[in-house]
Image 1 (tube, helix red, strand yellow):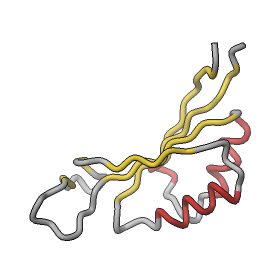
Image 2 (cartoon, one colour; image 1 turned 90 degrees about the vertical axis):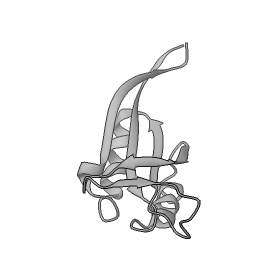
Image 3 (cartoon, helix red, strand yellow; image 1 turned 60 degrees about the horizontal axis):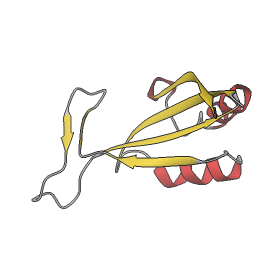
Amino acid sequence: MSQAVTMARIYLIEGRDDINKIITRLVELNASGFTVFKGVAGLGSDHRLHKASLLALSSELPIIIEFFDKPERVTEIIEQLGDLVKPELVISWSAQSGI
């Protein structure tokens, strides 16, 4: 049975954003689940290329946190993350869960 859900994706930069606080908040808000992806390269909102390098001791690599839930829950969770994440770094779209 198919169910309407909303997917949400949060774009962050390693070392600039407090990713652990965001993860903790998602757990506290009982998000149905989430995945954290670490990119090897990305072009940030500052239009600077962030990429992995063998010579770099610390990187500003792209991080994406993705989750989905019922549309009203996603809206609530995004609102509760407002003090940790800039609104322009969050995107969401409608999807279907299940078959």
